[in-house]
Image (cartoon, rainbow, N blue to C red; front, side, top):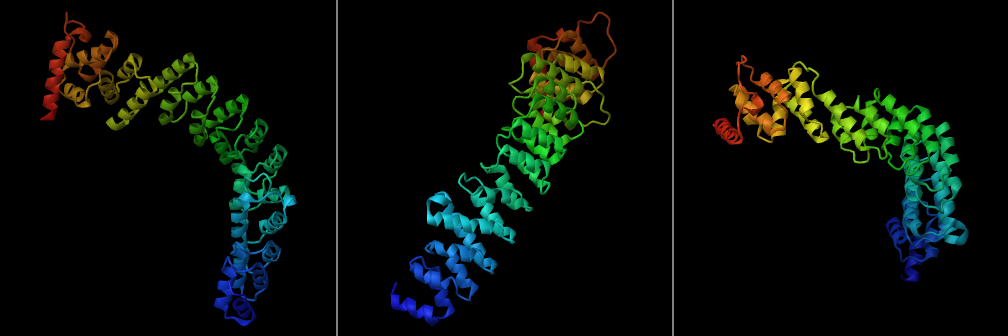
Length: 402
């Protein structure tokens, strides 16, 4: 840039020219330092945001009376941070960190939040500044630091849990990667349900088995804890068994599908799932609701002869009809048409195709196609052969399609 033109602008150029000069990365550092003291805040803000501004401008601009100036500097320093060495190694770094510490205590939340986001995971940030941000009364400011700052020690975290500046402090700490059992215990002892929910959802957090057991007991009342418990890695077998007794029905399938539990535990969970979902009368239940239960049982691997026998005994027609179609692997319409026409032989054949034993087949057919008993009749589960069953199913499919 022409030195004489720069001097003319500095001595009395119009505001637009001075602003353009302050924002130009090619402007000499000396001119930018001069413009830093301009009476117009928009010009000082342009200097603060200029990547060519010398480090000597950082301190004064961090103390500027105008919010826009301080915000521009915070954003500029945030861009500078990734390659910035520790403060003691470089004059530019020392000036930048000193200005950032000033901005981290700014009265304007947006400015503090900009600094917090920029420094949240930097190992070379000043520890005092990070502790101040962690204790900030604004969740926007404190949250990223509480979750990610590597400088916070276990002692720091325990102190914050014991005397949280705001309730959100606990939840942010609960989301922190790899927190210790001691910190987890402190979070649970706080009784903050939101923090405990976040802790259970944090799969990297170390939680004692005894603590998990206590939370499982309480999860019967706090439904929000149930899903993170069901999906938590390394869930103790006894905790998984306890959950099977009360978690929401939609969580039974993922609980039974866990591959990290002993085979005996998985079998007991599936039996508990079947006990809950098949056999308890549900007055007024729709076919859609019954189909949902059948789907959960199928996913859990718990739809079997015992479940069908239990549901038949309880008179659950929708459930039994849907379960029979699922186990026999035939369209629901085939079973429904057999039920409507009271085609007991077809239903008996479908029971055999579904792999149900004779006693269960008798109960299923008696529920879905009740008929007066006939002396000397063959057991219904073997009353129709494979060829006849295929013919009957084809006929039902054709009839249902009309």
